[in-house]
Image (cartoon, rainbow, N blue to C red):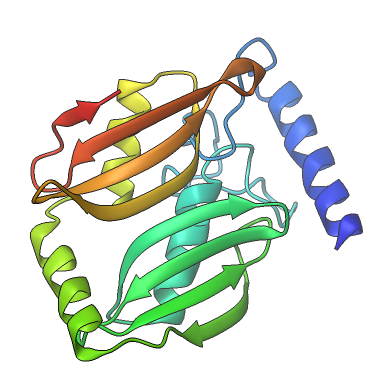
Length: 190
């Protein structure tokens, strides 16, 4: 695992230096606007490298998780020392927790969360109330807190409002919590 992490770090550093990004804070999750590989924004890969460019990891991990649980909605995603963790809710309200590789391209664990009918109902209500998916929420947060990257994104309820809460980091590992209304994208806290 350390070898994979070291390879990913080296790949990300090399990509940042060769893509003209060496003078700005390179985000591991921001949409890729410099890639010329022809892939979709936020999920680009350096041709032949097997790793995504220094940006787009959050979206890549999210899409890998969604494909592993068809018909589900991603309600949380978080980066950690071992890769990514993602929570998804199925149409019946069942929540699954997936672990993913550091590059976000492979599911390494998939388990159902034990929940009663009330918990499943709450999950369904939150998913129904959220008009913005995790990708739109992430983009809105990046706009509210420029030059940061998202380390955690969760669909939650605060004071009767369904919100996306994000933990963003900036230069010097500074914290930038952002909360947006999940129905309309309005920034509640930045």
